[in-house]
Length: 382
Image 1 (spheres, helix red, strand yellow):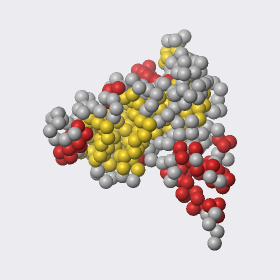
Image 2: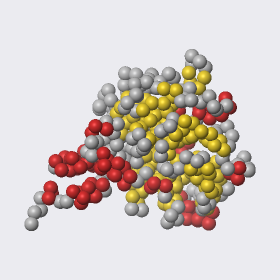
Image 3: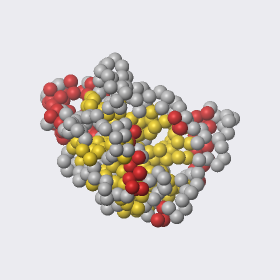
């Protein structure tokens, strides 16, 4: 009976490799044999592996930008690891800039170690495979106001930016197809009022096939949505039930396939709304209420501080939603006090867990991400 590794059925090898982290496949597994190399290089495997990988959060500090943390949950356990970004121009040097957006394992960032360190040139990078793709220069500073989404219909990644045009004195909205276009092209915004166009100043949120901007001046009032396939921006009003009390805190978060809105009802409870991007309709989901779990949260705080005799947590507790993990099953919160502790709440199993951060939350940026083998060099994924 044959026991050679290459004698295993193709389907079995495919399923085994799907369960390996992207970094292990890229650096080790694909070199085991020719068969594994060919399987992991196909477009079918790359995107099957993508959808098999759990969504996590990148946590990056304003003060220590070069080594962000990646936090995900797998089999009910929290996995926390360091991410390493290598410079294009100096392979032994790490990236040292903030990133704001990502899609399917690809991230948008600037390489401050390169020759254009003052130009704010955008790059698409995959930290798992250490591949970097420079984008054409924009007409103005754009990295804070840029987003990226995947168009499944055209199998293309599109990047949108809203830089301030110093020549015209206006806010532009431009787009390009990453890896294809050599210049940015304008997105039509003439149908939007001048007041509504101001929403484009914000940091965008990405869902499957769409990029969203939320109203920061009047939270909960309007959302602008760009369909990256048609490259058309539409305006939608948030359900009036979300906004009947303007003083309530509101948090917009990407859940992958949809945009969510969490409306604070207190320190430990939120109304939960879901936006369908294609129709612009909001649907109310079950409320998230942790008021009855306050004692459990307090115990987690005591455990992080060394025991119940440590400095007591504040009363009442107050949590802030920061992102979805595990493909929309787990909601992450940071606490006002202690400000270096995050909580994870599984909306399906109703379990609560926590992990510590190395900085206070007000110094941190939280970005949804999943490790993948996706590349803009599609000829590698035949």
